[in-house]
Image 1 (cartoon, rainbow, N blue to C red):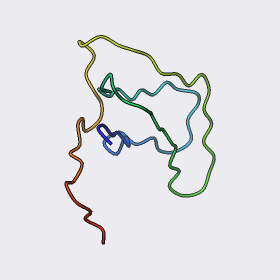
Image 2 (cartoon, rainbow, N blue to C red; image 1 turned 180 degrees about the vertical axis):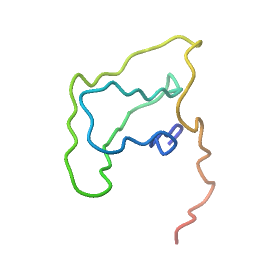
Image 3 (tube, rainbow, N blue to C red; image 1 turned 90 degrees about the vertical axis):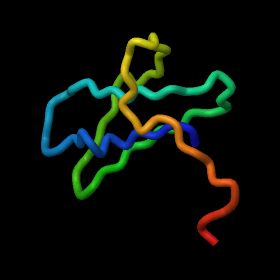
Length: 77
């Protein structure tokens, strides 16, 4: 994993109407996959509409933690 944003610093709370939310990350050109998911904390429903991936210019600030270092050896044994 090289980039991550779980929106912990800007959580969506309560009942809201349709709104646009963005996650912007630097993805290396040689990446082989992109994964995304939804985490619902508590009860309720989450709906997605018009979800898309776009290439943006370097002038757009990233929203996530940026690059993450992959450990040299396993750490969870």
